[in-house]
Image (cartoon, rainbow, N blue to C red):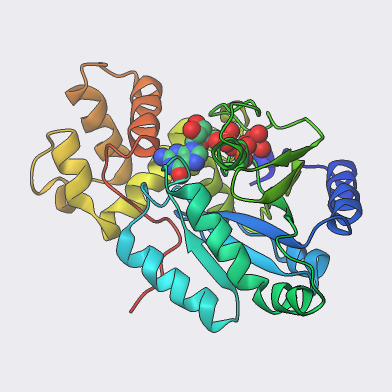
Length: 282
Ligand SMILES: Nc1nc2c(ncn2[C@@H]2O[C@H](COP(=O)(O)OP(=O)(O)OP(=O)(O)O)[C@@H](O)[C@H]2O)c(=O)[nH]1
């Protein structure tokens, strides 16, 4: 999916270098992963980068994801030895959940410090994740001030500073921006659907056609109900014809680009129900 790629070798090298420099400053890394894309929004390079540094995997946007899938993904990650928290980042419980989980990951270190008479030392953390995964939102909620700009567009995070949280964390206010791994077209499309890729960088009708194809197997009823299609629409119609039927139902005549934008927004706002694009089967 060549046209989706917005990360060039120079960007990646810089992001990698910044992360590595900052890594030495912190006790723990909060690796943010979109709960709707637990595989596609992770980058295997991060494992190499983070190495033995304690890590907490944070599944963000869990309110938008399919709860059964989120549970299955959490179990899979835990089997791999990772500590995992599942968040609606914007929830008032977020600071408490994160602090408790960070302390659990660092329990041995904290115990050793206490033995040496060091009590209540702040836990230094950095956030890392691909664009639009919720880094600024999490930072704001942890610090409980509106310090970092958030926007539903990739590429907004820019500041640098240490930020103290009321619960005793100190967070580096330069989240590691990780690059997505556009390994194949499927991953690229899923990232595009989730909002991780600038909307100007991909063809929305292609993305929505892939979404329709996905929902055909996953949850056709969600599309049928939202756009008042015939019950047998998915048996009778191709993906393109489904998009045209949606376009007509929305009153957009043959302007399927306009319909594609509407469907994309509906998906991202949870109006097609909760969904996970990387599925664990069985
Ligand atoms: N529904 C839902 N939306 C969320 C959650 N976390 C973040 N968002 C939304 O996702 C969008 C992106 O969030 P940001 O915090 O700006 O993401 P970021 O990782 O800092 O993005 P960059 O600055 O592009 O690197 C915003 O519209 C947030 O309101 C969540 O847990 N649930």
